[in-house]
Image (tube, rainbow, N blue to C red; front, top):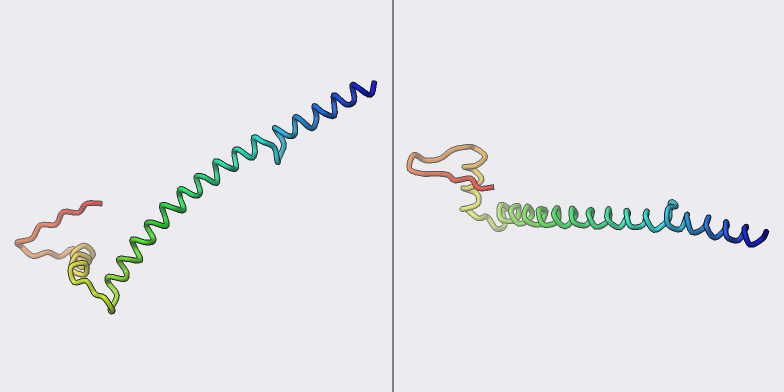
Amino acid sequence: MWQIAIVFVCLYFGFYTVNGDRGLLHYMHLSREIDYAKQIAAKYHTEKVKLENKVHLLSSESLDLDLLDEQAKTVLNLVRDDEFIIIDE
């Protein structure tokens, strides 16, 4: 009789080791979510670095006149008659 109880206890713990709140399946699901979050964080980090570089180039210490001209034309939508603007995003 005690052998049946031991088998049921082993089955119980084995089931929750795989399917429980802290089981293997839940762990794999959380690992995938963490990988996805790291990919998104890396994407936003590169975008942040690009924007920081652009802000630095537009700051008063190191003003890049070409970038300032480009931004003015893009934001204000102003061009001379002999200019063409090709916007590539």
